[in-house]
Image 1 (cartoon, protein in one colour):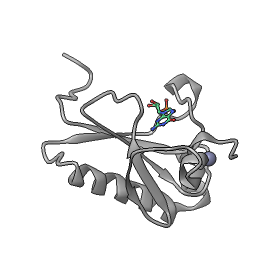
Image 2 (image 1 turned 135 degrees about the vertical axis):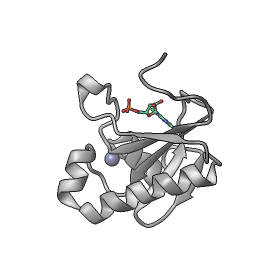
Image 3 (image 1 turned 180 degrees about the vertical axis):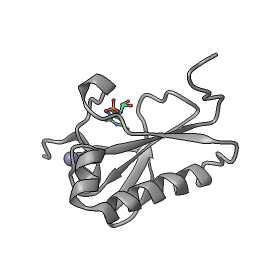
Image 4 (image 1 turned 90 degrees about the vertical axis):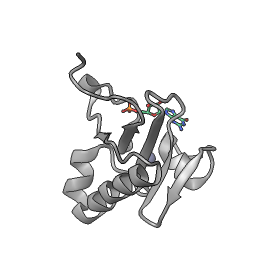
Length: 113
Ligand code: 5GP
Ligand code: ZN
């Protein structure tokens, strides 16, 4: 078994509701959605966070962003969406395998109010 939860999803050891898979990335629905559409996009190779993936493999980081935009379009988020990379403990990162949160389907204006 993979030590990393998201490597486990890439390997098929951990079930997930996968919406997109390529050689470079996998996208799947967040288990605890914060908006009507909440999809996580990860690289198939392990990198801890966005700073590490962009330093190690900028082309792969580009694939991740392109997949996030592709997911948003496929989910019908033509009115707008947010892509978030929580990076490090202060930002609330809990899974240390880089993932883009694709959030949409409701008013996401931020800061609120
Ligand atoms: P972070 O807090 O690291 O930015 O985001 C981790 C995200 O992974 C959270 O939104 C959390 O709900 C999601 N998550 C944690 N465990 C699982 C899981 O086993 N399956 C899925 N699909 N999402 C998970
Ligand atoms: Zn991993």
